[in-house]
Image 1 (cartoon, rainbow, N blue to C red):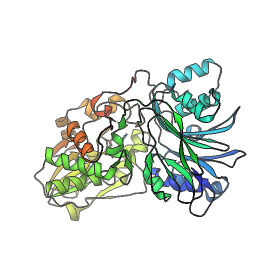
Image 2 (cartoon, protein in one colour):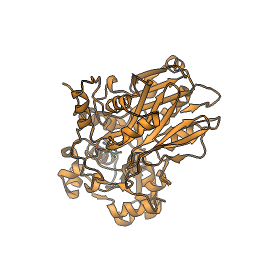
Image 3 (cartoon, helix red, strand yellow):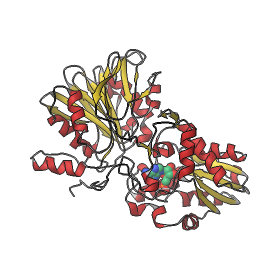
Length: 460
Ligand code: AMP
């Protein structure tokens, strides 16, 4: 971001607030870099934004330009050496970069770089990006950014900070969201999700187009070129789970998309039941949609410890298992003696659903009908969602009936891919809106053959 926000000219403070609105996207580490026309300063720390920064850390990041990042690892372990933004000195001055996504050709690019004698200090694909940018040819940063974008394949929404400019750019397929806006006090900002720009008081938020490079200028975002767009492949899982419900992407409000997923699920797979509950927070919109379409009352069936973090962001299975038990209590007053429909947004590894069904039964639910507001996930994502390796995906190993049995539900149904596609179109994803649903269908929009896997660059 560039410019004033909330009465302060420190861009880092505004970026810091924006990171809180993006905390759901990554909780492993957080970082900020600021620039004041002469140099670039960086601070990074492990864990939540609130843990990674003290007041003094933010205070020290002076200057009218800043970029920030909250990390959820898709390539490279969740350690400090992989935290972002990455920072290097280049022949054109200091350079910092923060990246949302995952390059599928990082292994090939990394090998070529190491063979040329370039040393690397992390196991992240993002460091490969920053080192390529440092060495890129071109007369300006936008030219150098575009020239690198031609070599990168995969998902890369990213921001770049130099000593006197900030840029935001998006891969030509538009896998991950990236939006920009003019700041109310002057200047511009870009973020992965519109909710963060609303936090900063921005009004006219727009999507950065696939392949575009945008400068965050003092007068608002300005297009500075880019590369040709490919057929659009917006990640459908952003609508299923990842994005915050108050974000809007491709003109589709996430809450609205989820409600329509729930409504479509109710029509496809009704249940003879007394009430509908959600697994907070990510399935609340879908559960409301299911309840409205089925005419069943919606109630709160679980209380959630909201400060423990998203279970999937815990990187090991042992931590994830513990996370489920520590995170939810069922509410007997709501579910005792009732036939309950529990709507969840997705089943990935299958760790969460079984314990949730057990909690409901222990709380006295007479029947538990599980409804999942997306199709079975059978294929791993290489474009920025860590679903783990293919053999960890429960729907790849087991049929729907076998999963029902394993989780102990009275019935289990998923939304169909057709139902989801129709719901997205109804929610506003009209002409020119193409999405990637490879996690459900296995139809990857790009060749993912060379993808390295999450820990492909670990040394030990
Ligand atoms: P599980 O099936 O135990 O892996 O957990 C699935 C639940 O975690 C879903 O209901 C989602 O709320 C959430 N989740 C979403 N995306 C992921 C992901 N990439 N990996 C694991 N869990 C996820």
